[in-house]
Image (cartoon, rainbow, N blue to C red; front, side, top):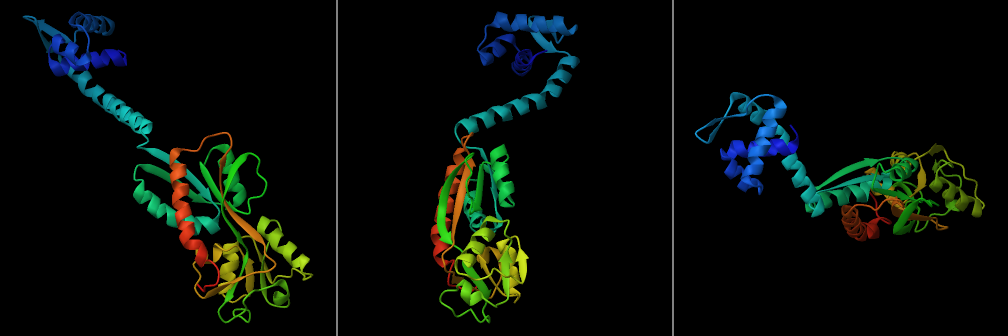
Length: 303
């Protein structure tokens, strides 16, 4: 029995007459009767007893009707899902982000976005930039977010905030009262550096070299968030992106401008081969609102 035959059979069971089933299915009464006879011929036993031109379901028919109920419940749910997708009532949005944005402005935006878009199912994870890029390129994520992205021809990139690296230190650090921190002021100070393999680490190292100051760190770390944790613990000053101090959740950190200016662009990106879902545009709009409130307070405040 195929799905169409089951549909006709179930209509006859509900309506108890072939005429009623024909009306419900927009078919002719002879077509329903012929379909029932064909079904009984195929399965090899009667589904209905015919008595005085009335149909009485057999016990086998009742069992088939009950067993087919989950199948048609799934079909009804699938039809509802298709209608919702067509009307943009249900969507899926998969997001990957690096820690500075993911633990800060992205998380803040998700709270409001989820409340405003209850039908959108969101998947979210925080990873290293190379993994975020790979996830977007392979289609595992619809949107990626990162800092200092660099050249990525396979992606469509949109700049969200064009900021600069900052210096962080504890409130009791000798540099805490400086208006601007330079490599020369960091000379001889205990310093938490970023590994040279990272894009931001390379940029900071270049700024030190341009100022004629050796890039000598007491501790080298990979992530800006780790540098903030160590700076808050009193290990020294660090030069990090402007988002990491707040995202790290460390109290007592002072955030100061760093010169020479080291650009650090926060970007959203998606695959150049696939169109992002409609929900991605709504999320980006919500994120811009978060940034408009957050960015003015990133530099110059203690944690």
